[in-house]
Length: 77
Image (cartoon, rainbow, N blue to C red; front, top):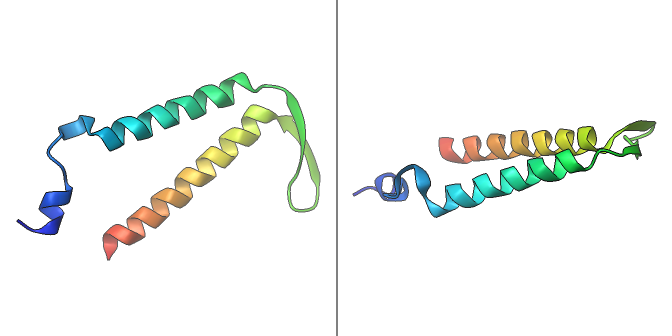
């Protein structure tokens, strides 16, 4: 068996890693939804006032995009 075949897992769609990642994503979304106060954030130079949920959602999406980019590059090797 090649390493690719062995690492694809035999647990199907409900592997422990996928369950943990899904749980973390759900908890992150709940955390974003309950933090609705207005905050002032310094974005490099200007100060921006926005709801905290929007700032958290932006950081969550940016982190997801960075993670997807890094994993795609690693899988291409």
